[in-house]
Length: 31
Image 1 (cartoon, rainbow, N blue to C red):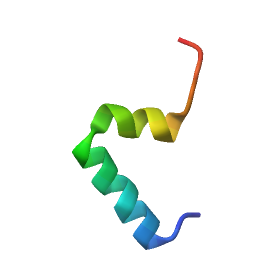
Image 2 (cartoon, helix red, strand yellow):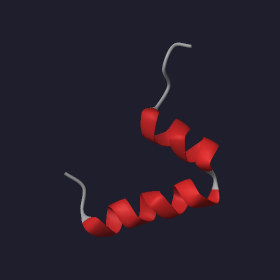
Image 3 (spheres, rainbow, N blue to C red):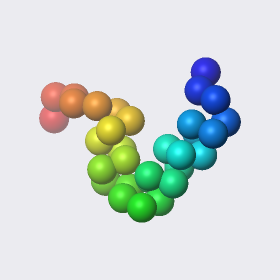
């Protein structure tokens, strides 16, 4: 379980760049 501040930081990244954020969270996956 991530800390609250880490979750907020991830959400900020997602807001700034959703595509890059999703790629960072999901990671490299076979299409």
